[in-house]
Amino acid sequence: MTAPYAPRTIFPTVYAPIDGRTIPQILVRRLDPGSVQAIAAFVRQLEPRVRVSVAPLARNLDERLTTSRVGAGLASAVGVLGLLLAAVGVFSVFAYTVEQRRSEIGIRIALGARSAQIVRALLASNGVALAGGTVCGLAMSAATGRLLRGFLYGLSPLDPWAYGTVAATLAVAGVIATLAPARKATRIDPAVALRAE
Image (cartoon, rainbow, N blue to C red; front, side, top):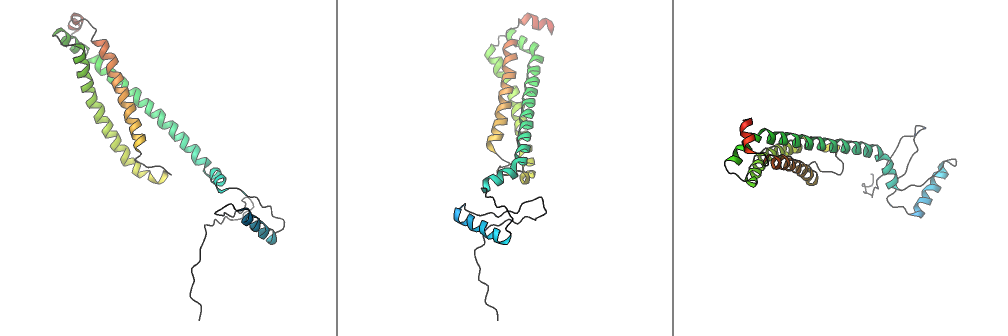
């Protein structure tokens, strides 16, 4: 009759195949000099010609994650470039929208509207478009972020900081794109605007 199985403490271990190119590694939980020397002595008993070197697990992890970090850096650079292109696009569309309403602005001025009222009206109309686009974009980003969850290490697909930065950048671009041409349009002569109409 065999003795009952007694559970024992098992520490994390990594086994790597020895194929002539890789170096077998023993990972220990704590870098205790005594235990490291004991492991080195034990390995030398098994094979006297072996070279034993000690390296912290953090350095090993850094070396293994270098490729992933380079890829993440490139993806971040592409994301920032995409955000800048989106901001330029928002700026261009809103500036063009205000320019298209130039004759309407001239008519409003001729009827007695003040510059502040016109700027507020333009900000409100462009703000609705900006808010709608931002909500749709954030919803689509959240949906696709869940699909990419497996590729994100240490990051949440619903990172509020990232979503807030994108929304704020596009909002600032939209406001600037509305204010600059709106202020310029409020200075036009109503007679010129009516003649153009």
